[in-house]
Amino acid sequence: MHSSFSLKNLLSHDLPRSRWLALLLSLSVLGLALLPFIFPSTKALNVAAKVLVFIVLVASYDLLLGYTGIVSFAHTMFFGIGAYGIAIASSRMGAGWPALATGWAAGLALSLLLSLVIGLFSLRVKAIFFAMITLAVASAFLTLASQLSDFTGGEDGLNFKLPAALQASTEYLEEPLLGVTIDGRLLSYYLLFFAVLGLVLLLLRIVNSPFGRVLQAIRENEFRAEAIGYRTVVYRTLSNVLAALFASSAGALLAIWLRYAGPDTAMSFEIMLDILLIVVIGGMGTIYGAVLGSLVFVLAQNYLQDLLRLGEGALQGVPVLSQLVSPDRWLLWLGILFVLAVYHFPSGIVGRLRLAAALRAHQQTATSAEVSSS
Image (tube, rainbow, N blue to C red; front, side):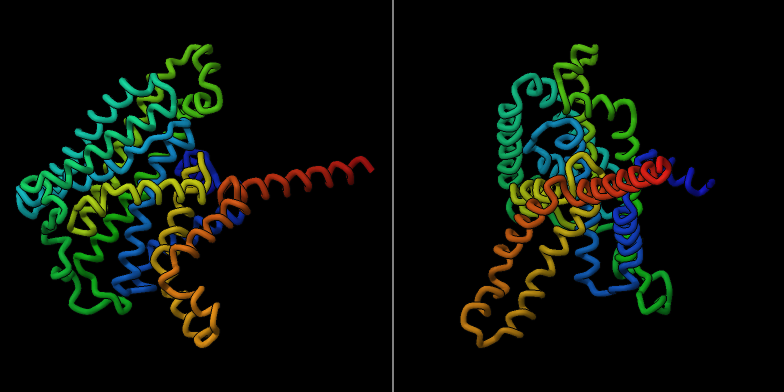
């Protein structure tokens, strides 16, 4: 009883409400926590780190789109600001914890300022105009990042060194533990893991607070929320600011993991498209959707080519099929998987699982009522 109460508090009373969803989330968290010991390869660790970063990035965007109903294309700009904050501070100040702290704080401060300005000046206009304004601002920042070579490294980006404690050359145990070398790289991964865990729990707290309920009311009917007495512009602006701060933190985490920040890795429009796809796959208006959606998408993005390569080998000599399963056509198959996911899960993975659980509970209640009445 006490453990259940503690879990409710930890998840801000937003329980999965589906046994299958709870199982998938538990396996996802456990898998990411133990991955360095289960799959100790470099690629697996890089993929898991990308999943962790995207969980925060997508969840922060869902705060805008899923919970408030705001369509913004500037999210990757804040993501890039967080990454460049770490990279610029570390390359100028040298490898050290003060550089990481300064870069993170500078990225958050700039994201706060820009999101506040964009929110106050743009959220009064209609949704499509706001989306266009954010797209223009994001494009301008991408151009600046590519052209300010002395400051951002231009198209090549910035490489930097991490504190000695996070470097792969720093080993904490003389002998491997369960076949895994305990070094600075492993410490970096667990720094990412616990930072993401804390940020996701904080987001759950925000969306399940009275503030989060108002955001959902604005999403459902802005005029009604305004009529009740809520200043919708203020709430929408605060939602925009919070989403930007979380996106900036995700960018900082990405830079720490890659030890690099560049326009392609942090500010490209492709990342924005990935975010939109993951939000739809996981389910809008659910922080849990960001976890499952990121996991499915990043795994497909990184391992679909390997699966197709196996398929091509198995179907070698078959005229049409061997060409269809060529690794070069992985984007085609990724598109097909996305269409199938949207068709079969229109409300996302989380929405579908919760709906199935609710229908099952309703049927059980109806059956119990029939039995008791007879």
